[in-house]
Length: 389
Image: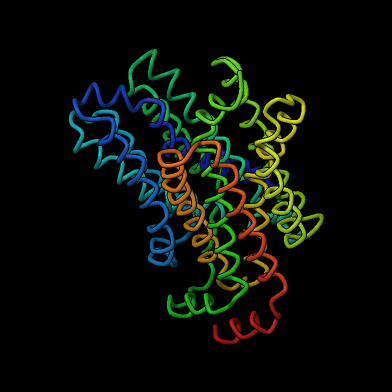
C-alpha cells in the first residue's frame, strides 16, 4: 500500500475534526461571544449544508487543476479559515471563518477520496478509500471529546489552535511528500450529470442518504436514549462512546478490505441486512449487557464500513465520472446526517427517544431495498451512460 494513502487519511482526519468538534463547546462559545446556544448551533448547520452542496460544484470548477497544487491551495485557504476562527472577536466573524473552513474542507475531503484509489493498484482501490474513510470516521468520533477536554481546560479557541497547527504541518507534508497528480480528462458538467440517468448510480446515492439518515436518527440522540433505557452512569456512557468510536474507526478500513475481497455489491448488501436487523434488536438488549455490547460494536463497525464499499461501487459503474460520483455520494452522506438529526429531534420531542431505533431501522431497510434494486439493475444502464459520455 502506498504510504501517501496514510497521509491523505491524516488530512481527512484534520478536516473532519472541524465539523463536529464545535458540538462539545457550544456553551463556551455562546458565553464568550454573548450569543445564544441556538445561534452557535447554526455553525454546525451551515457547515453541513455547505459541505453537502459545495463539494460537487467546486470539484467541477477545479477539474483542470493539477491535484497536488489544488490540495495546497485548499489547505492554505483552510489555514486562513482556522486563523479567522481562532481570532474571531464576534460571532459574525466566527461565522465567516466557518464558511471558509466548510468551502475549503468540502473540496479537500473529495480530493483525498479521489486521489487515494489513483495511487494504488486496481485490487487495492477499496482499501485505499477505506483508509481515507478511517480518517473521517476517527475525526467524527474524536472531535467531540477533544473539543470538550481542550475547551474546558483552555477555552473554546484552543481546539482550533490545535487544528491550525495540524493544518500547517499538513501543508509542509504535502509540499515534501506528495508528488504531482494530474486530473482526469475533463468531462463537461452536462455529461457528468447525465450519469444520474443511470439507475444504478441514483439508487446508490439514495442508499447512502437513507442509511445515513437511519444511523443519525439513532446516533445523534444516543446519549439520551441510554439515559432513558439503561442504568449506565456518566462514566459508563463515556466508555460506551469510546467503544463505539473505536469500532467505527475500524469499520472504515474493514469496509475497504471487504470490498476488495468480496466485491462492493456483496459487502453493501450483507452489511445493510445486518445493519437493519441491529436497530430492531437494540431496544431489547438494554438488560442483556453482553448482547448490548456486541450490538454496539457491530453497529459501530457497519456505520462506516458501507461507505468505502459504496465508493468502490460507484467507481465500478462509471469510472469516467468517478470523481463527481464520489462527490455526490459525500453530499448524500451529509444530507443524511442533516435529515436524520431533524427527524430524530422530532421523534424525541413528540413521541419518545425509545422510538428512535425503530425509526432508524425503517430507513436502513429502505436503503437495503434501494441497494438491492441498484445491484440487480440491468448492466445496459451503465453502458448507456458511458456511451452518452
